[in-house]
Length: 294
Image (cartoon, rainbow, N blue to C red; front, side, top):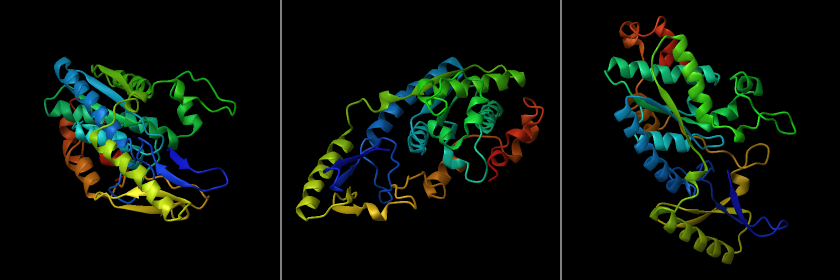
């Protein structure tokens, strides 16, 4: 999450909502600038990954940026029609663990096998690590370096490698011969030429800062709605109980999320258990709904 400030330390200033993570609490439907450009690049890369999976008959495990929220992984995965999308917001009724992430991916792999599709792509938000304890992360078996506070330095390792390594270990335990490869979508998503949307959007926000400044307002964030109208969002209205700007997470009860998670991605459910026994001794452990306690 990044907020660009116009002003001095003693002046609250006028803030511009910039982050590719899309996790600032703007009004519904308004992205942070940079998000659409990063998502577009992610989709460009993501579609080539899916084609590689199709032509090679393998699986790929993709990690997408997102410090806490899963907007990028959700947006890229949905646009690429990936059979499995995993974001931290999904774990709204159960504890988030690496084991559950692994079982969700296997749920999709087996479902696709039942459908006669031997390949696929699973995308996982790096934001899942924000909701795990150090003990859970260290139990992954990955060798980490540690910061001055004794916490694993996640920025030095590929998240996709962690997800994929744990997946391969579990697949071998299940005697399933499935090849998977890790792909990290990292900083390259933000080091790109902006899309037309962001070029215009940033211009409107810049002009909007001048408009709000001329009105004598401060302590706010500039906002431009889909029609281009500029309004200030006062930071005091966006703070949580600790005086920090709230994080905007993916809204799981939205119609879009419901369509993606119930009608788009592919996974084992109660009606697949008999067919899944061809591949799994205990298929109930990989029932999507049971894993998430939905």
